[in-house]
Amino acid sequence: MLIYECENCSHHFNTQCACEQHMNNTDHWLPEFECETCSHPFKTQRACEQHMDALGHQEPKVPCDHLNSRIHRGASVPCHFCGKKYTSASSVTHHLELGSCRCAKGVNHTSILHAIQQRDPHHIITDKQIEWYKEDVSKYLATDLAYNGFFWECYLCHAEFGTKGALNAHINSPAHSQRMYHCPKCRKKFKSLAGLLKQLCP
Image (cartoon, rainbow, N blue to C red; front, side):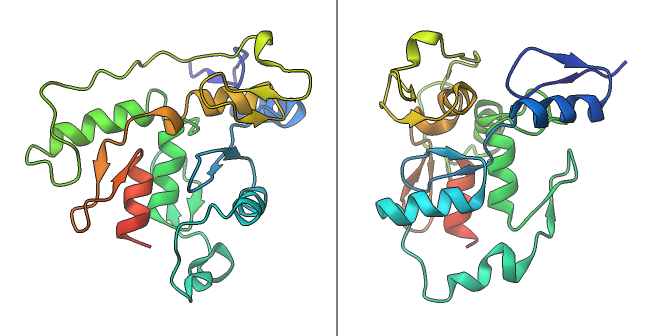
């Protein structure tokens, strides 16, 4: 029997509908959007864009990049696991790297990096290493000590979040990972495959 697990807590459900209803009622959906510079997670694209505008965190864009937005392009690239549609391959990859695809258990930043490194023996897009980079695959959960009286605070970078769930998503995201990917053209380094794909396929 298939079991559905909440993205943010340990509750299990017998149906996807029940699981989604729980996540809607408790606001337990993991953030799907991430700042291009600081990797701060957001639940909506609008909130992410407002953050990047306020702090100047956008990657340099070509003047007509607005035409590549969801408004103009629509969402036509599906996740092969859950079927949800995104605007680009990098958006689908980001969805998978965050581990937020409920139909792709075990697929996350680390498992994708390992699969890519196995398929990139000549290090076209990954950094060469003496041995397999054994990034910790544990899932971390913030304790109540992370609450500073106003926000949930990351103990590594001191980024602040409105909910414990958002902090947990940040802690388990590539935000504090090494930059293991690089552009084969300009050699710019990236923490995530999604970041590299955004560079290669804007």
